[in-house]
Amino acid sequence: MIYYKQHIKTGQEIMMSKVLLHTLATIVMAAFLVTNAQASTEGIAAAPEQVSPLLPGLSVPNITLKDQHGNNVELQKRFAEKTTVLIIYRGGWCPYCSKQLANIQKIEQQLANLNAQIIAVSPDSPEKLAQSKISSPNYLLLSDDSLTLAKALGLAYFLDDKTAAIYRNKRGVNFVDAQGKVNVALPVPAVFVIDKSGVVYFQYANPNYKVRLTEELLLAGVKSIENQ
Image (cartoon, rainbow, N blue to C red; front, side, top):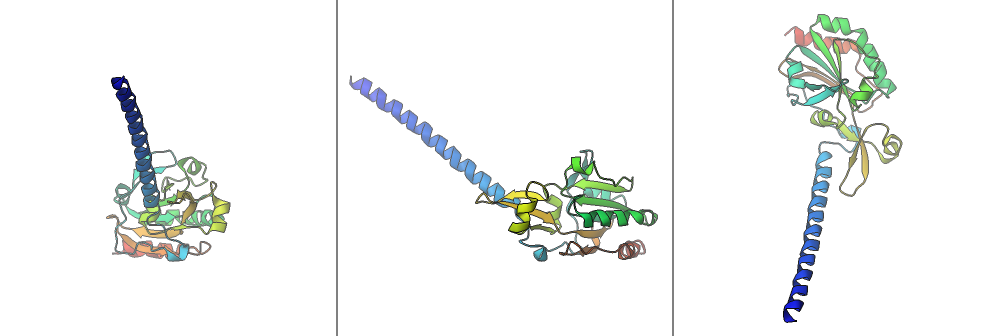
């Protein structure tokens, strides 16, 4: 009888141990998810006016993105080929971005004559990029759907709550903070002229997404690097 009672007690202890282990595992997993959520928001400004774009003279990090066909593209390898006009835009849904891309396509041949290639990057998925009307061997579209490049370039920012409520699950990239709140982020539109070593030579970024760099100034920036 004494042995039987001791056996019951041991069974209860085993059950309690399992419960404690399960609880501990849950706590560890929750902490891991919170840490990841917080880490994913690092490098994202609270507003477009607070972004800190990568300055001329600094190198663009070597980041791999996907093109409209789902193929991996290593940026530094592409930069090494020729002078690069790197365009960061909000997405194909943005009329200001579409107009900018169309205008730059008009000077595509002039850029090619200057031995410059065009790489346009947005948060759009590869599937959405495949639907783009932009089609040219000298015009590469890449997906930055996690804003990895936008954050590295200092261009990512969170939308205000009112705008985020409209864009959520439709436009921009969703990030979940430690409290479980969903925040929507986008990049400030920008243009970089990058040399073959991956160093920024010219940069233009404007928190007012309606104001874009003119084609004339872009050509001047590319010509200046080619004349070095």
